[in-house]
Length: 447
Image (spheres, rainbow, N blue to C red):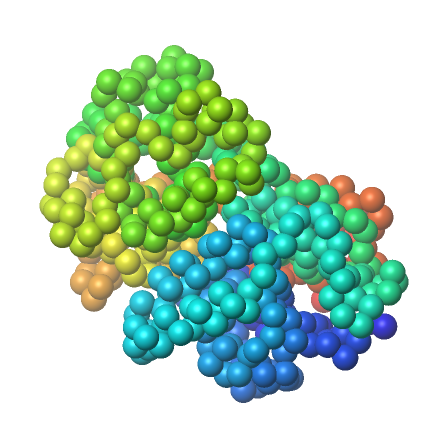
């Protein structure tokens, strides 16, 4: 029996992933995320079924655009089971607690919600088949996007099958094993975030990061990196350390050595918490990270890495001169401590701003990327008009999403062609470009 699949978020945009599958009398939801910027998602009151009628919620990973509506879901009556990987289970409540900080809920209400979420959620191993109900089985596979990220394959009575890709990561991402190849399926629901772009290779992105660090040391400026607390912060810490300790970079960047490395600050309470969780989940790291750790080189910790935990220290850092590298949230500059740093430093030419992740339409991050190209370009930060004099960089190689080649390669690696592919989680241009490539290769891509 084929299901009815309703795309309730991220069908025609990037954020707010939410997909309802009605199959064999069960209501199964895959992700329930918040939309960001100008993206939108279907209000719960307009869903085909009420939250209370959902039997299961599967979570592909713990980014807010995939889990952020979970508190709302529970407040509207959801009492089903939440299924995800073990790392996602560990990351779920810290991510949601941070997202709920500025909600209307009281501290007690938030704590009650966290307890409910923790009680309803279950962590499962990768690459093991589990029975759901009514002849439906499922299996989680590594997606290589962030720690714990998964694609999910459902099968009905050893017949019809569907894969939800979740977000697929780039190959050779620090700390993470590459995305695994799933068994064939009749339908593939595939993300397309960067379906129209090609990323820099890992070595090139590290070199570009090295160029900025060298400039910062020379100009005694600051490098501001709006970084997602989950995934991107840990990758950057890893690669900054490699620049100063890996001999292969010493000839390229002789100025970068342990003796004169600039201080690196994680100015994000959530980022610090997530980094601790990453450290405690070393069994899910890739071989490279495990090998470093076994030889006494912790891959996401080093001398000169500082934690900015309280707000007083954050304020002091905002007024401190460089050189310094500052990793702070939010990743799209929609709020958080990065706003204060940019407000203080975006109008100084000695500083650099480095974007290492997708900036949704309507976010300050996207505005900075756009208007930095024009003389007199400016952006509004926290209601203040700020001229963009800092040098702005976008390092696409740090994207946690696979690029067009990566997505196509992953699809082609599946032993048999899916009967159909549905593209989601991408802007129109990206979906159109990816669909064209896949169709030219003989795939049936649904409109």
